[in-house]
Image 1: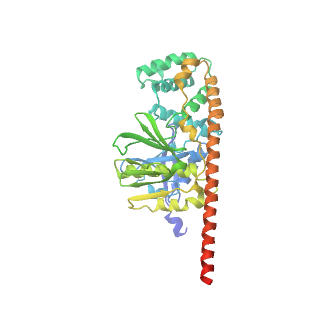
Image 2: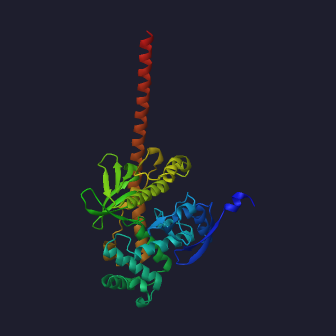
Image 3: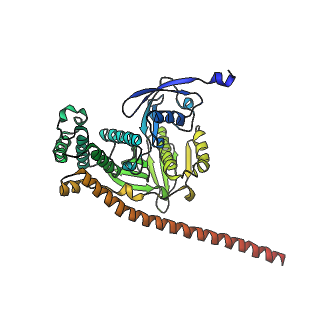
Length: 394
């Protein structure tokens, strides 16, 4: 056995899956986070591992994501560590996931997020989603008292959901799950881990990042969406998280502590990398970013400049599109979840994508104008230098 092989140690850790099953995984001192994630995904027959990540508690008791490109042993400081398998990057349309096992785990994660009140939604949407889950779990039966998941909700929500559930008889579990995914995927704050911060006026608000950019919530309402294409750069200095935007005022948020501010910055960076860098350019364009993340050390300030080349158009409409459950319940009385689902998908595909395509065309047109202007400036500069040299020769 060589000296290098003798130095390789094997570590065993428990991993809590979204099904609440606990499995034991082995990894060596030379394996990275992505190696462990691949093992767990293969065990669950998940073909789309890029949606998922692993969380663990650090020495301070705070939950943090395991970095996929770093060695596991450099991130974990104790041997009896427990990892939590969770969705880290939510897809743009959760109901479009084709892989059965990926889709099921995404559903389990969204269901858990809903029961833990991680979504900023109105009471009517909460009633509707609760009724859908009742139909999924109980079918046409009404054994509400035997399911503890519904007993922790406010009484008025529980009673309204039971009344609505009685109108959903005949709906299959597949249709109920499909409707749950469609509804969740179209609410404000979908796919975000929101954080409580204070804005420049010292007002309490919440910010989070997902596929479309950074969103700001105030008093449980969506206040602003800063899309990736309009963000020039973002940085953190001590406990202040700053977002510099194209064409409008910058935003600054007080996160309370340096560690929380860096966690938010890192989360935004991860989402930028995942959703805005194309697969072909990922390795070349992100090498500098990864080196910066790996060598932060005691840096108190890090800024990231986003170039137009690293960005691809994203669906801005999805984050703004809210399925109005109040009106849907009043007009349709939820006669059939499948009908509601079809109505929602039809409106989304035929209305929102038309707006999005128009915005994409505008973006392409603007990019072309910038390119023409840039070429003109270069030609003008070269011509000026040539004339200057010619006059000197004369």
